[in-house]
Image (cartoon, rainbow, N blue to C red; front, side, top):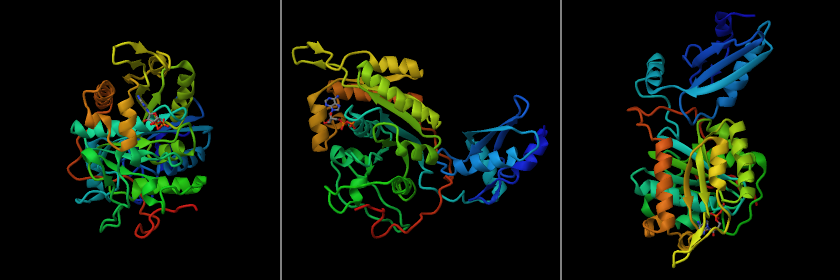
Length: 384
Ligand code: ADP
């Protein structure tokens, strides 16, 4: 078996494509362990949660170490450099002006909101959480990755074409309450235009949303995922290894099982699960009588099974639906409504589990590759 020094030497072959130095020289190799004969575990520290070249490191490290005599299995794990370590890295690079600025450099938390199936209120919850977070003093944005059933523009009441900044970045539209939004809808010729997305194109569109949008300083970027466990979740997990996953489910056991599969897929892609939100949790009549239309207890069961907190139980309330249809999030128009109260409760829970860390003085970069194409004109590749 090779010793640690020999493994470190082999890892010199792994070059960070953006910083153009080996991950050893950059101090990005956190640990090298050999828990059993023939097996090597390497942990690589990334500069930012939004580091889309994780797969490059995964492949490079695996190949470099597997080439050594006696190595049968290589496990590559990832974590993030602490602010002090990032500063050290900057000094090593001799750059006083910070690393190249990435689009997500000023986004403190990325939360992917997913569900097992459609219609459980994932988009409604996403839109209202973004509005409630912003109202609570935590600037937030909602991004539609639910490319087939995008509904963020309608729910936040924002439509139109985004402007492009002097730096050729797409500027999000700003909805009521100051919530920023980016959706596939903004790039369609007509609102009713049908889109047939194929895998690579979808990947490219999402990548462009993340890289070519100037999100500005955000405490939370909420990404509305398509229901289920498809391409998009995988793309996002690759692009944003440190994003967290928030699961929305309805209370009945059947839905909870489907939601669990989605959560498990997220875990397979190494997205950490932040918590569960149960939606459509009972309906209370004006007279105070409560009906558990979609059953009861599913959210708590799911949270227990995943060993994450149940962040909120949002009751059925007609005004939440009409607000969503009219582009006026209920958390803003009636913060005291029962559904709003439950959403604010969920927001406080989300903040507790994913506190926005202060940004460094000098923004550091993600490893965001330059935009593949200029974003003026038609920014996104659209299928007919
Ligand atoms: P998904 O994104 O999971 O497909 P939506 O957010 O589009 O689901 O919700 C489906 C429908 O149910 C929408 O009309 C929405 O406004 C409504 N809805 C969602 N949650 C609630 C709720 N708690 N009370 C009343 N209506 C709701």
